[in-house]
Image 1 (cartoon, helix red, strand yellow):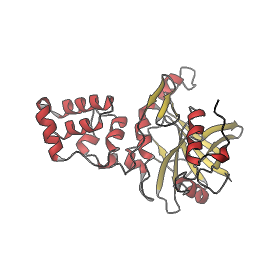
Image 2: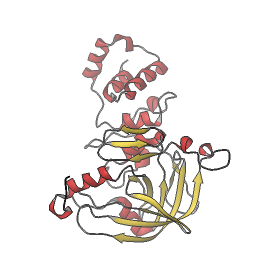
Image 3: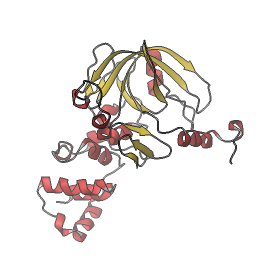
Image 4: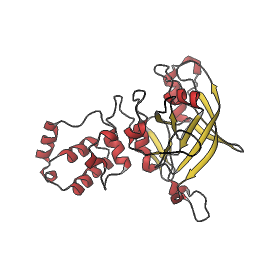
Length: 286
């Protein structure tokens, strides 16, 4: 058996062992605002519920393992003491993943991920309209566990209002675990779909994805492509160039001159097998 002294290995390696062994973990899709009212949206898998009276949740935007910086989420809640925790289901998992990209401060991750800002009732941060359950929270305490890269910052929240999409309720008014279709985080690039088991999503690219807001409107407003599809399309740093699209068209003349619905349907089939580049080429073929 491999026995490890945490103080004798690098933090990134230790981080990988922790995430791989303590899994799957629920995801806190945290919405905050800064002092100027600018929205921020980011997912965290160091998260759980810790009490019902009062209803208490704790999540941890840890200091960066790579460069010891803090997250905008932590900076924001230190000032405003408010956050909305949105749960993540399978229908928005790709958009959630896209939102975790390290966009510069001030960039609205709601727009980049193609998710809808919904005004809250009791706190200033917005809710994620597409999330099946949204918890408006007041931050009651922050526990700082250290000052080095990888250190956690435990944000302790009291839930002050809950919003539940009635579509995920059973006949008795409880949450149907099959209907809510939650996902959780595991190690590496793996996630777990609660009702099915493990599946994999490639991590967001190291460079900045173009975002859903940069996708042409005729694609973004498609009646075929889902939010997850748009999340995948938005997680590229650039579109295929004209030469690549032209070569693709020569190799696949069946995609030339397609009507919009058929084009989007074929693109969706490529996305189902994680071939985002071919999906974009189909969409861009004239």
